[in-house]
Image (tube, rainbow, N blue to C red):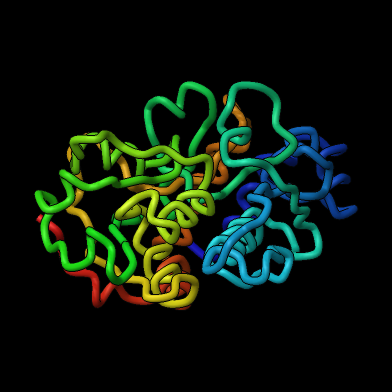
Length: 278
């Protein structure tokens, strides 16, 4: 299905009355009554502050540059919004998935879809499946480790509340327990200062950190998919949002027509160079 036909179908669904049709003709976005959006005629998208490469380039999501910035604009277009009608807001990672009212229509910050989070918010279909990976720095106790067993007696950390942290607890199971940090920035600082021996992050972030941010960064490898641990990222919407079905349909259509694959290929690249840790 083309984006044009998708917008037309949504517009027909919204134009149940003459008044609704008039609103569409005057420029209200298709896909839902204007009252379903945070701001009438606009779509409001949430991201982090700051938002990091390769998900957002130069912390400027409005540029459309970066994996998640590009996904957001593709979804907005699928829903019938021009780029000029996309409004960006900033939230913390935890605030966006906490119970309560939201100031965004959808939010994307590499949120893994989990049953626990579904109790508080809605999720779209997955827009990316991200393997978890383990990184370190040259000369650390983890340098040269080639297996999960080799990590068990080391200090392994991740940002709390993330899939990476859950994977440490459920899959690596280090003897000292998972080392928790408030953010990836704090975890990276702990790695570089020797507070931890290894850090678990998603694979795109692992490539970026070891290739661009860390002096002497080492990508030890990626972890196998763990049973019961989701590594699929979804767009976050307020619980019970009237837009959930339309946003999910937009992701499904972008997947089916190859748009998402093209965005992934452009901004995240291949996963070559990340051996599997078993």
